[in-house]
Image 1 (spheres, one colour):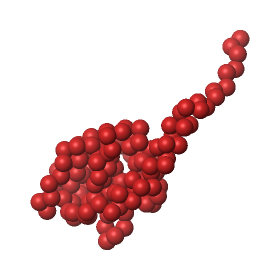
Image 2 (spheres, rainbow, N blue to C red):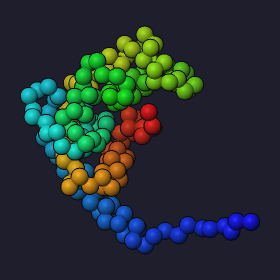
Image 3 (cartoon, one colour):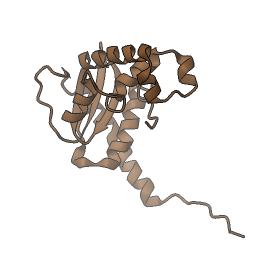
Length: 168
């Protein structure tokens, strides 16, 4: 018979998490206060790791993180991007699509093949391309902080409609 082992939180791990948590409000303020631009307006986007925020008419809609801001923002905004590259636009289209079909867990590929959905997805990519974007670098490529911050920022900004954090 195997003895039951109860995990015990690590005091060092909890301290490390607390140090991360203390940085979150100021990092969120920095992201929200970053200069806004529209993709394709000539703004030079660095090819560095960073956080980004899409908003429309002053309303935050989507928060993300990436290892390469220039490439990721182009993927979100490209007119021919597939569902895994333009996940934000895909989520916009999915929310606008027949919710009964979504409830039966239709695959991404099946949705992309659906002509009604494909039209919504095309429109959503155009909508994303017209949105304001803000970005800031990830401090010192701190991936622990970025993992915690992305969820914190999405929750704090109320972007859960499109930031589902579902695997795809």
